[in-house]
Length: 361
Image 1 (cartoon, helix red, strand yellow):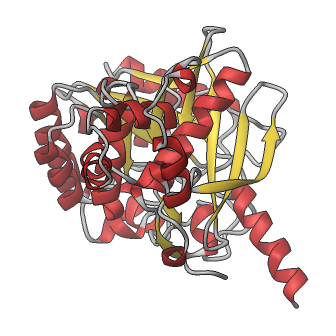
Image 2 (spheres, helix red, strand yellow):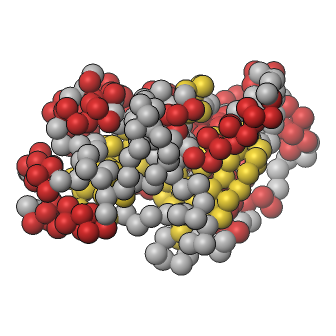
Image 3 (cartoon, helix red, strand yellow):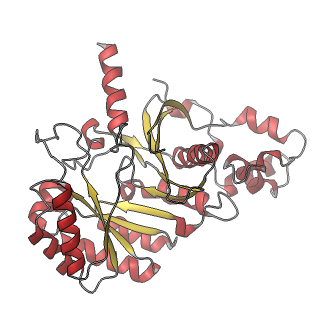
């Protein structure tokens, strides 16, 4: 596989300041840097028609790569969910997902921050292929561009993005923050700061660093259990940061940003779905302005430890939800997306990696 360093640098990898400096070196007015990047980010359907100084576009095309990835595979569900498998310049692959909104003109995007994942969460498909590397800021932005394009082709507008794809964003925070600045900035990608959510399994130093970056984006915490023992069994990072410490970091972020945090909770049959655990979760969140987002597990086969997890029954799911609400917790059940395709994060890449390995044998 070729090294990504041998390929021309993608335009999506440049900040407006970097592109402006390059333009100045080549005798062009720096005013055109954000205009050119807005074309790259496809801010509007007509942005590609903006005229640039003579010779600029040809020179840019000769010096930079126009894309940071190519399309390796595309799956479309009956419900309209579209999953993209993008191939990076070094041959590795990463997933992005476009999800149609209840509003027929809107869509939401799910973006990855790493190739694979090192968190070892026992029920997650992504972690089963291991961690390979961090994504560059340009590779993250590339996902946004392609999802925006997908949304437009479906007659929709990409309104929000979540960093809930492959990888742990807090362990690639430098590149995540750089990408968010380009994606959200009204002068560049123009998505808007409030339209971005960054998710974490609870990396306390990362939450603090994101707070200090003062981007004004939303935060989501993958909690998955209200107690340290169960959580550490499911999420190894729970052994390093206990529930109390993580929630205190989230409290600080919420106080600083003014954004209500979402608590992600994947229901696993017989593991974290008892009514007692629902009550424990409500007690944990009492006095905190946080929303619980319940998800029913999408089975991905044997886990890293050889376990076979199953989704909670619909009856138990509804009982868990009702128990949370009965104790004053704001909670809702997120409907399943793309059940007829490789819906769970990492499933499509896992299958593609397995196919590639079988061909090389």
